[in-house]
Image (cartoon, rainbow over all chains, first blue to last red; front, side, top):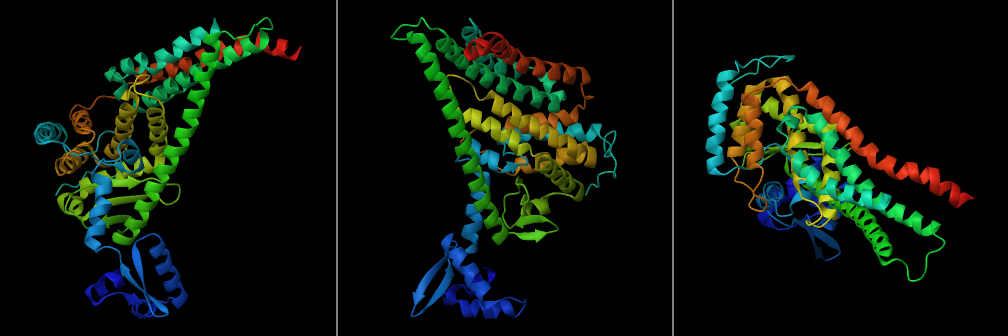
Length: 129
Length: 293
């Protein structure tokens, strides 16, 4: 995938070109590359262009767009509860007022905790930057 | 008589009981027991609802003097039971499928787009966030690279400990069951308190695991940092309150409430056994011999 993105502006690559780029750094079969590209095409991650008898492949979206889409899955709760169940987030976002309230409570935690793990803490004092 | 009692019980367990439970703050001090209690209440509500229908069914089968047309109320009760069961199974299937689809698609993209840093996937993105994708063998913990920059070593450890606790204990399965219940029934019959409360409770459990490993301070700092770095999701408008509550717990640590835990376990046991006994005992002593003989 990185090869296709790197290829970027110069247009879609053939399987041969991708294979050439990958086999320089690792031991990989030509047919493997072909299969993987075909599967990525089925998933809509790359697009296939017919070019004579061969196919040429290009990413369906720039890398940045794909990352933005990925993070939308996480950060936007468009799909509601099911999405929130599928991806368990460490902390949901808060509004500005809530953030201020959080800072106040955090000050309490810091003053009440010396930095050592609570009772039963095993490993080490939490390393603070 | 049995169908009526069970029907009333089902309604109570679906509405007023969860509402009351969510107001008992002490339950947050015994999160594991509290989750068990919530599960028991949900199970009991479903059992009571289905039991009511079963009880009607066995009465209909046994009552030879029944005249056509059937007692309308009985017919209706049976219909409702069938619909409840159908919806429950259908929704379980649908939610399960969609959850798995979402996770699979997301995981494939993560594997393509993220870098693998010692088992943790790092996505280049300016919003600091951390989450996990549960799965049997293929679970992933994902961070954005801005998370790595904004958190110290101890805080990062706390985040990872929290996520690993989720994955280890398969908290997602508990959540999935409550998501099904929430989606299966119309808002009139139940409220979403159960789902929200269970969501909070599993976060608390994972928080406790992180505190044991890394201390209260590191976790609190990580929580505040990551929550403040993200805008709230417009769609639901919740979550912010949960984070505040979680950090407050860290500010005033209380010893785990053993008495609360014991009470919650007992209540959980009772609430499941009650409707079961109500259906099963009369049915076994009366209906089965008559059906056989």
